[in-house]
Length: 208
Image (cartoon, rainbow, N blue to C red; front, side, top):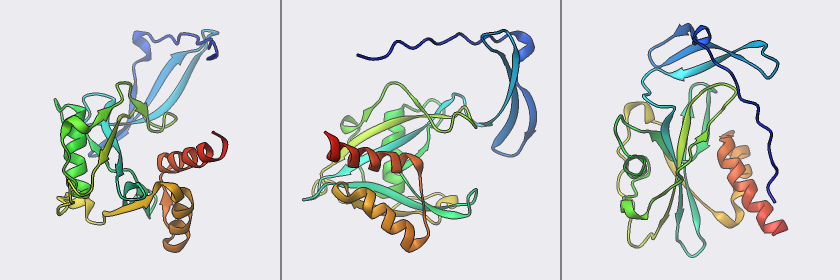
């Protein structure tokens, strides 16, 4: 049985609108205010995307390649914010007015070269948060199974700032071990979502 959570409503008033602390071309830093369960006003700083029309502004793609031993489709790219190459899920921003399924199909094709039918993509209706202690940005999670013989990869169609992106396919069975080996061999950072996915597979194999 699921626990019965006691979630206290958080109060926002007109005088607790965000205060802009700074901004660049794409990001904006804000201070937000709210009142806790004791009616004490508290503040927090967050980063938002200036170009977003919704906090649900991106899509992460969990794509399984149906090889004899199924593989997870990942990408490796340089991330200036951490000054390292990172292993991540294929992902990208949802264009204004774009359906998340369309965005998932587009990003998968552009970043990995795999072209899949939209009716094979399953989108989780509820968005998930990226880093709720830092930003309001959330994403949709798309799941797709790719039959390799039916959809051979084409050439990537990368944007200028994706110059470093490479495609990576790792067996699900040894995913966590392979990630650790790649991390050490190439001094990579593993995205926390990819690590959680791999850890979940390992824990399921061990305990379920």
